[in-house]
Image 1 (cartoon, one colour):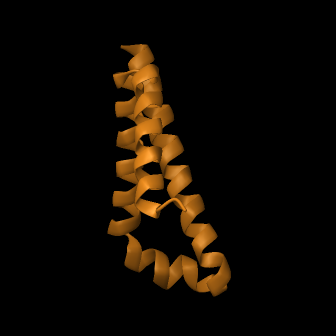
Image 2: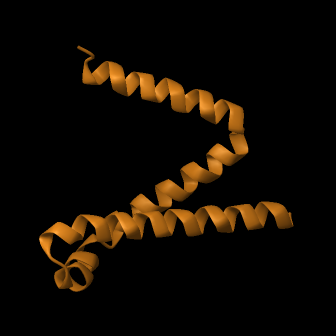
Length: 87
């Protein structure tokens, strides 16, 4: 049986190889978008939970937070790409 730690390290190696093939610039842009998305979720956690997530059932809160993270990440990546193209 394959241990979970082994599976995680295999995933890290696979994503590292994919990142190496894509290039450092694209990986940096993606990392910046993900980092900003996680920061925004952490910074505005109280506001999100008290106002926005109060409207949803407990089962849907996870999906709403995931959607917000994906939206922020996608928007940041698109903005970085546009800025790099204009430079």
